[in-house]
Amino acid sequence: MYETHEVLNQSPPFEDVDLFALDRPLQDALAANGAAGEAAALSAFGRRYGSAEMLDEARRANENPPRLASFDRKGFRRDTVEFHPAYHRFMGESIAAGVHASTWGSDGERAGAPTEVSRAARFYMANQVEAGHCCPITMTRASVAALAAEPALRERFIGKILSRSYDPSFRPVADKAGMTLGMGMTEKQGGTDVRANTTRAVPTGEGYLLTGHKWFLSAPMCDAFLVLAQAPGGLTCFLMPRFRPDGSVNALRLQRLKDKLGNRSNASAEVEFTEAFAWRVGEEGRGVRTIIEMVQLTRLDCALGSAGLMRMALAQALHHARHRSVFQRHLADQPMMRSVLADLALELEAAVALVMRLARAFDHPDDTTEAARARLLTPAVKYFVCKSAPAFIYEAMECLGGNGYVEEAPLARLYREAPVNAIWEGSGNVMCLDVLRAFSREGEAGRHLVETLAREAVNLPGAAQAAAFIVNAFGAREAEATARRAVERLAQLAATAALTESAPAAAEAFARARLSEPRGATYGTAALDAGDVGTLLERALPT
Ligand SMILES: Cc1cc2nc3c(=O)[nH]c(=O)nc-3n(C[C@H](O)[C@H](O)[C@H](O)COP(=O)(O)OP(=O)(O)OC[C@H]3O[C@@H](n4cnc5c(N)ncnc54)[C@H](O)[C@@H]3O)c2cc1C
Image 1 (tube, rainbow, N blue to C red):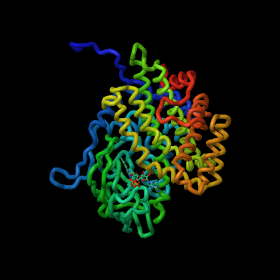
Image 2: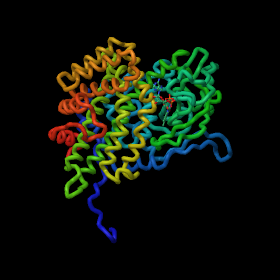
Image 3: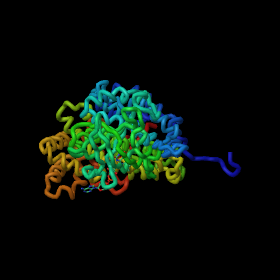
Image 4: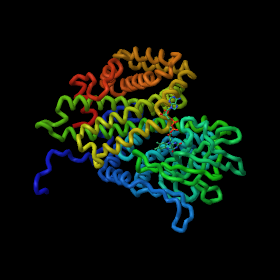
């Protein structure tokens, strides 16, 4: 009780909710992509992560960032990082739920459909609540794809990777209940251009000794890292454990932790390797080819993660607008606010349909058409969804007015988190260059994919024109200069096609508002009719 006033007209907290049951676009995308049978399990996951307790743990994990412990109190090197218990809590829960590995069988081969789609749904929900811990979760799950190049290593570690027990202790893997993996590619002189890596690898007995550095090494308390270094035969992929095979601490010297815009619960270190031990993964000189198998999966997760951030932002905005009155009317009933919220909901419908359809393509690696879809579309989807997120979240933040801007609402955290998914694992332009390269290397498959998408979106406004534009743009002599426009169109066409399967009404609205007409610079400018607006808002968050 305040002496001067009563607290009125504030929205109740958005907590103790089922993140799955409230998300109709997710449920429909799941059903359309072969994972309807997972609904009950996903609902349990959604209730757990949507609980007030977990939402509060997320706040704590981010308000208490990790700390570097370079030395112990006697001056011996420690090179460890201390995380807040709330971070460990998320790691424990996500690993227990298999988000770090459920797509792999006990032999390290793919577990089969629909594990990609169902895991994608969990990853998307986990990101809504606490995105920082999702970094080691995604790297651990993706590492198995790179380890396939070295079956003996994969066999040696797969049991620990698949384990559902999170073990944060700093000990050799053999003594632990489970393990996590990270990745080190980026050096000071270049991240995109990994061929410029200067870290050297010298063969020795059982493995190699690596000397050099990495400018970014996230989640440095992982038990091992997939690392690139120059071996005698060229750039090569290695697996570098935190402990040498003889049980001694390996020579990873953590220099400092990055002071980051967002992603604060997670640590990203600068590291030096002083003859650090590592095993080779794949042949010497084939480092990029080997690690790209991992990167393709983390790129899918970047898009899923961004969609998750967008989802939480929209849910918060809509929830607030339904409870907050201005001029005697709920915000959610004010025509202009409805336009803004519906435009956001439309964008999210597309993002969710797009990422879940892409996850389905990963569920079918033996189907050549699906495998081509995964190869050709992943960089386009990463580009489009990750770059959409910051502006989207900013608009959702504004729906909460001043409350949106303060740290207690999760909007500020979501907003600070959003740009990283576009930057790491290949920044925006690099994704567009990847799409161009893939389409020029696999011209036939590329044309076939665009034709398929156009067929799936047939009769929807702007679809045929978008397909023609994409084919022309990718074939043009100056394709690089216009690549962003073409890649954006490709992602929007793919989203329209995905929506025809999971949410046909939204497909029509999306095609009209994004493919057929030029998109306005801000949300709320799309030409949506009143019926579209009502449907989109009800699907986004049932009343
Ligand atoms: C929080 C955080 C954590 C990270 N964690 C890790 C990690 O664990 N492991 C790891 O290896 N890396 C990590 N990274 C590094 C990240 O992957 C790189 O920063 C990223 O790949 C970009 O590389 P760069 O910083 O060297 O930028 P650059 O390669 O210098 O690129 C700068 C800009 O130029 C653009 N560009 C590049 N080439 C072209 C071109 N030909 N035409 C047009 N534009 C171009 C890029 O799109 C980018 O926008 C992390 C980064 C961050 C921010």
